[in-house]
Amino acid sequence: MTSSRDLPTGDPHRRSASLSKFELSALLILFSFVTTSWSHEVAMAQVQRPLIIQSHIIKACCPIARRSLLPRHRVQRLHTRTVTDHDISHLASLPLYPLTLADLVKHGRPPLTTQQLLTSANFTLSILPARLAHRIQSLRNLPFIVVSNPHVSKIHANYIHSLSTLLPWAEHEITSLEDEIKFTEVMADLVQTHSNTISILARGFLEARKYISPRDVTCFLDEHLRARIGTRLIAEQHLSLHFSSQPHAEIMHESDETPGFIGVIDTKLKPAGIVDHCANIVGEICELKYGVRPSVVINGEPDYTFAHVPAHLEYIMTELLKNAFRATVENGNEREPIEVTIAPKDLHGVTSNEEAFSKFDSNLRNTKQGNTDIASSSFTGALTSSSPKSDAQILPLKYSTPGVTIRIRDRGGGISPENLAHIWNYSFTTFNEDQASSSLTGGGSGSGMDALNAMTGPGGDGVNSLAGLGYGLPLGRAYAEYFGGGIEVKSLWGWGTDVYLKLRGVGRVDRE
Image 1 (cartoon, helix red, strand yellow):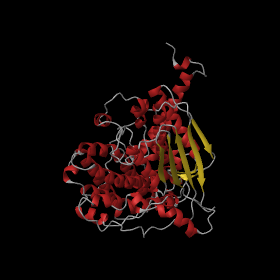
Image 2: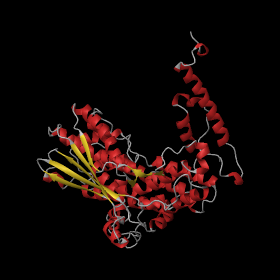
Image 3: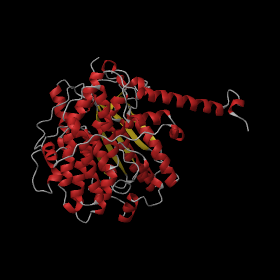
């Protein structure tokens, strides 16, 4: 046998062997830094990193095959506090106010200083406990036989667990970098715990459909999932700021490869790039299913950029293009291109800020973000004291903000009038009941357009399929409306469909 010592210098096998030794050495040095306790005066340098956060380093630096070489540590349990009914009732009595994209970028552009990072952590801590308590209360307001379903009950238990990890932190302010790192571990646990909420709830309501009407399911899910968007976005924003910030940059070996990002928000988001990416993915699966794929033509202003959450736009565009591709091919018009038009909407030209707010900020409402608890309270017959009666508490953004309108036009034959009235219902689907049940239980062939549901969306759901449950369009509209946008469908039955996606950006992120 030829040993690695006998291989020529340029041989890829030797390069691989040398690289693995380097990776292992670097990782061991990294862990020696991570497990070293530093004094408060050098808190801006390395601080011991919890194992959940260390796992991100392992994934980035060490291939799966070599992770077994690492020393095994027992996973530390998060500090928790028992959640009482009083805790839930008190926190659920607090009103929830709309979250804006400006709230998420107000801490500054990464890398953040220690003080900015602590401010971000305390802002996150100040709003998450009440949001979790509202979701717990809304689940408890459902009919008992529905809550007793094991899948719905699991979601309730997940929210209780997440609140129990936050309560110990709610008693004091985060004032040190070491505490911020421990708090970030709590945020990582929260995101992971609720990664499959949508698919688990879908299965629970499918099994409990005999005991709750489709209308009640739609109202509850629309409210619950909209509120979940904000909760998850808040946690993910701090996680992203943590990993890209100055106090941790040396440990994480971060480079400024994405200068336009502030956490999960891309301040230079190019809609045409997202459209092209989603069209390629959908097109490949369409070709796998049908053997053909329509082309996509992007026109308007493809170079336009604005500030938004790219994961949200990617999810929405995937759903809209999936519908357009499927309808076009099944209608026999695969030779007709799907036309996507990018039309910027800029409010900076409006002379009066009040006029701009009245036109655009009026769309940013508590009901759009699931903060009113109206749907869940309908089961008990009375609104809770925490449910805002109006949107009088909403404050406008400091600056008028640019946005974008994206039109997706297809020749898929349109939507029949009887179906058009139900496309926003979570329970509405073109699949039959057996197909819908099969998609949730992992059955079926696993091929065709349903393979799109194997993609991980912005909510983390990807392992469990949502194909055939009618969740795509209403959930996409929820993401669009969350920050003052929306989706409008114009169907010409027998010809095709125009879908108008309107998104609102952040505006001026900083005043440099």
